[in-house]
Image (cartoon, rainbow, N blue to C red; front, side):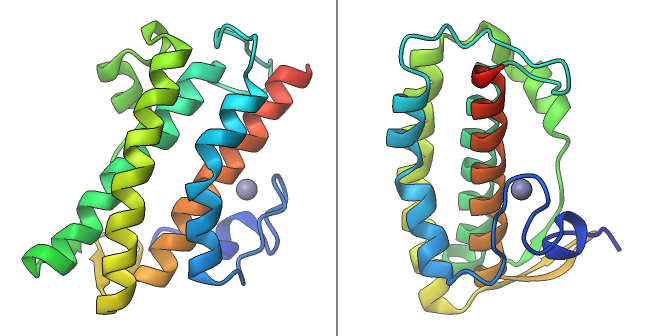
Length: 168
Ligand SMILES: [Zn+2]
């Protein structure tokens, strides 16, 4: 079984401080407000900035968070819209390569993230209301609550990475 959540990152997350006991609706709100925070954090930057300890540049982290939210919006919709709950993982590095994250202008990555957030919030609200539980191939059962927290953590964790890069 693949480790995930507090079991993998610690409670709170050792890197970004995310508290895994957060209410799902509060996790949702962290994601909803992310584009505005990132727009502020990255003002005047190119997106090509890097940190020696981190694998991607700023724009790539923005692209990743948007794509992760988009992927999970679809997975949750599989539950509440189509009644299908089996989901599998994906390789973020392979997706970064296929999508060419580094070539995306930062302003476009932020625009795309905003669109992903709108879709994700709509989907997570439906999934929470419907009590969706996904069956993840390597993580086991993932309730909508778990997905809301996991996805919010991914967003906040990489927001922390971006702040670290830009502070360097
Ligand atoms: Zn974290």
